[in-house]
Length: 360
Image (cartoon, rainbow, N blue to C red):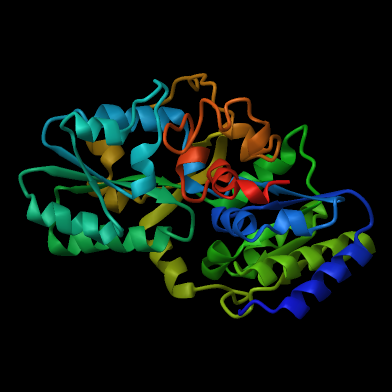
């Protein structure tokens, strides 16, 4: 969608005329977070509207115990860890310790751009165990499922998946149940909705009376979604709307859904900032447990969450702006991050830092 100055000005005027008072809107996608910061959308909107970042960055919601367990696994002889690039820089509970540091110390840790790349890595290294750190939401789950099925088909029995995949709906339900929850409407993630369908977010207005708009990622997409949310709030008529119709259907991508269903089943999982949430994770089905890294390596991280000075958990639940964290821009910078929100390319703190001139 090309940027159109007149159309944008009209949207902003409409938002300004419609806003009924102070409202808080939350985006639940790291790509939205970065797009909002890059375009300076917060500075365009009326002062009454506050945009908050939700639990939409997969790396950011991965709990510190899981990072520590990854670091421990990296020390095992004969193991190659394969991961997307952001995961390598996330610190564990000990300051400065990360997979990137472990690689510098001699651990075999590879950056891949696709889960299937990890399968190829296993085929090229039959004498080693290749563990893919599968981080993501429903968006990346079908591709991860395809990698597991490819490994089975090609006989790559030295490939295993450590599934850190998470489901968005249970997390939003947990967020809404929090005592200090204060959000008036949701910009729903277009990428996840392209898999699940727009109807995957119908529970927000139907069960909680919260306005919801599935949004695309261009600045005008986001402003159009904000305009629709403001209108719903002003009319006191919460409903689900799909702004991103060019990519999102009502029912979603059935082929991708079938791929997930063939490989995964829900399980309880931990989220940074939200704790353990029932049915919020995805684990491999019993018939594919030979490719389950947690079973093969007996991975456990059931202890209490290690306290760290990082307040990423509050940022991704809308309770704290990145700029209000006492570490932001001081002890915590992209060059020396304390937490994942400053590491990830979809992190709220990284977005606020990178586009500092666009801050509120």
